[in-house]
Structures are given as structure tokens and as C-alpha cells.
Amino acid sequence: MSGWKRQAVGDLPMYQATAMAWLPGIVQGFTTRSGGVSAAPYDTLNFGADVGDSAAAVQANRERLWSDLGFAPAQVALAEQVHGNGVARVTQGGPTPAAGADALITDTPNVLLMLLYADCVPVYLADPVGRSLGLMHVGWRGATAGIVAKTVAAMRAAFGMLPGHCMVAIGPSIAADNYEVGRDVADQFRNFPGGSSSGASTAVLPRDEMSGKYTLNLRQIVFTQLLAAGLKAEYISVCDEDTYRNRRDFFSHRRDGAATGRMAAFLSLRSSTEAV
Image 1 (spheres, helix red, strand yellow):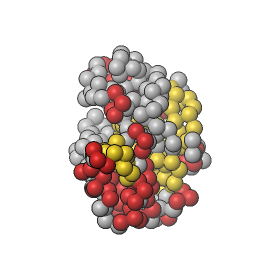
Image 2 (cartoon, rainbow, N blue to C red; image 1 turned 90 degrees about the vertical axis):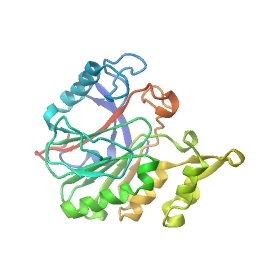
Image 3 (cartoon, one colour; image 1 turned 30 degrees about the horizontal axis):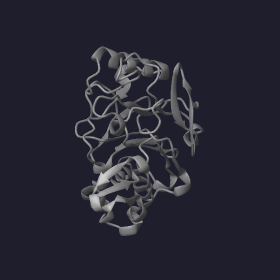
Image 4 (cartoon, rainbow, N blue to C red; image 1 turned 180 degrees about the vertical axis):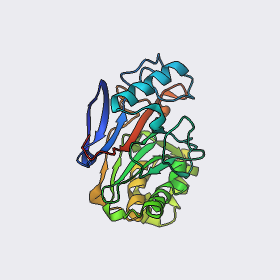
């Protein structure tokens, strides 16, 4: 699984980046769709509050995760997630998501960063030297808008993070074979600034050029954008789990349509240096 492992945290199955597991005090993971209380088609561990699921079920699911991780609701920081490139620095949690943000950064201990997914790419950044964190939600719109470079730049400016020291984990997301896009989207990546260095030369492949259908390897785009921002390839782990193909573990907007749930990516820094 390329540096990721499926295991239980409390009574919930989830995926964790093994490459980050050794970092002292780092709490991280990506939930599955199992272990919650939501009814079909959101069965069962849905974290999305705006997808049609019962508000009580969503809150119960969230509190189940937070309790297993040892966090109170007031310690959890969320983002509005508008498929853009907004980056918010957070120093505390609370019920109001960071407006216009698809990425959260912090160096404050005991704040749990949490973003939601149903095919898009979760990107975790942890600087073990400066003790700062970043969590991104990257879809094709965010990728073309430069959210990867903007998040890295924000961490450098706010915390003095050195990209060459940063550990990165790219979590479960839709694989290229199942991510079909039209010519308009394909052209945005093929014409992306940086040319072949952006990864577009092989990340966009024709499926049916006569009909204007292509496949997009968004993980590869994210990987190459991280390299362009100064991150080291040897410090980046990429999960090969496909949210579209793996029905057991994941919700998928592409597979199931609008009536589906959301998984959660989470990242935090304990005030204690004990490994979690």
C-alpha cells in the first residue's frame, strides 16, 4: 500500500501513513465508511453534514471518531472546502469551518485538523523539525489553482518550515483509471505552467479522443507539484487505495453520485512528544 496501513484506532477501522507513524506526537489517519450509525446510502461512518444524511447521525459519527482519538469537539478545526486554493492558519478548533479554505495549517498542539473527502486527494504535511502541520483537500480545481504550492508557501511564511525537511503523505483517493474528465479539464492540465515538469505529460491520457474523454492521474499531479514546491520524493508516501474501486472501505462521489457520504482525514500534534 506504499507506506499506508489499514488498522483499528479505538473501535474504528482506518488507514494510517506508516511513514509518519514514527514522528513523535503526530496523530493522523483517514477513516473508512465502517463503524458509524448512518443509514444507507450513507452507511455507516459518514462525516459529511451537507450530503443529505441525518444531522444527528453525522454528529454521532464525528463524536465517535473524536472520542477514539482523545479530542473534544472544541479542539477540532474544519474548513469550508469550496474546491479552491484557500489556506487557513488555525490556532484553535470550533464549530465554524474556516471560510473559503481547502487547506488548514497549524503549529498549535492539540488542535485536530479535519477535512472531508469522497474521491479528492488528501495531502498531509508534517515538519518534524519546526513542529508544524498542514492538511489539504485537492481536487482538479484546487490543483489547477495551485493549492499545493500555496499551502507549502503558507507554512514557510508562518512557521519557517523548510520543504526539504517535511514529511508528506498522499492518502486514499480516486485512481486514474476511474477518473474520467472531459477535454476542457484535460487541456487545463496539459497546458499547465511548467510543461512536462508538472506531470501533465503522462498524468493526462486519452480514453476516447474522438468523444473528448481522458483519464486524469490527480495523485501524480499532486506529487509533481510537491516536488516543484521543494519537497523531497523520498519523504512522500502515496497510498494506492482507490476510493472508486474499494466499495468496502470508501464512499465515492464518482461511483455513487451525490447521495453518498464523506470520509475524514485528520492530523494533529500532541503537546506531549509521546508517539500515538
